[in-house]
Image (cartoon, rainbow, N blue to C red; front, side):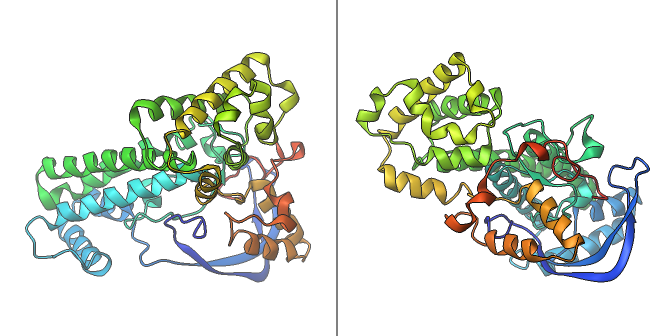
Length: 376
């Protein structure tokens, strides 16, 4: 996550304990012993939204103020603790940082899976990695969390709204310090604006556009995301392949099939693409190519810009599970190789091309490769 450019806590070390622990991955009575290990995580602060909720729920306003003041002095030293509106300024910054983090999650297809208020960092960092994952096929309804499989509250497409809801809960917790709803509402409005502007800039960058032009790009982006859902399309592979298409004037005369050819590696079952879908995607590609005619980037510059924000490699669940399987047998080579690979997620690494491949069919339903639990 750090090397993807996403605000995050860090993992300092992973150490085997030498003992086994009993884990029941799906809470269905099929527990088994697994190697025990300790992850040491580091961050400037591990303070979460929930800490402030506890104080307010217990009506311990003195402790709430003490915790808030400590947090501002320690983690937000640029704010004047003596300013009459310091709590409002502080809440605004939390809202802004949270919005920026969520934009990054959406950019790379990361799904947190457990976005409770106690899993939300006051610093806008990704925290508490549990049943998380990256989208394989683009599915806004996907959640990696088995315990969220019914309601799908924390699904990919709902993350911006859940972050807002969590901020509302934090605002309620901080209200006793301000005793005025308007400044808190301004902070929530700032979250909405920051996310919307950040999302537009993010989509422009994913498409290799120098700027976002709402009159054309609102529909261009929305229509693309709808097309990605219509058939099983690997999100990560799609945007890397899109960077390779030619958008010169001569390419505008290509047929739908010719335009779609460079994108075929991103489809899980390309031979089953219907004529109707090919026509729709071909029409979108023509619109996209026409849009790039007003773009200052040539194809080479556009490709470089896209590949700087669309990762080639992400920690796909099936890759992590393969590494876990080997580690369980005492072979840590894949753990080390993935760590090295993911330190350069945007780079072409020809010798490791297999790690950029779509999820194999055997991993669709295999435990640990599709959905996880907090005991995975």
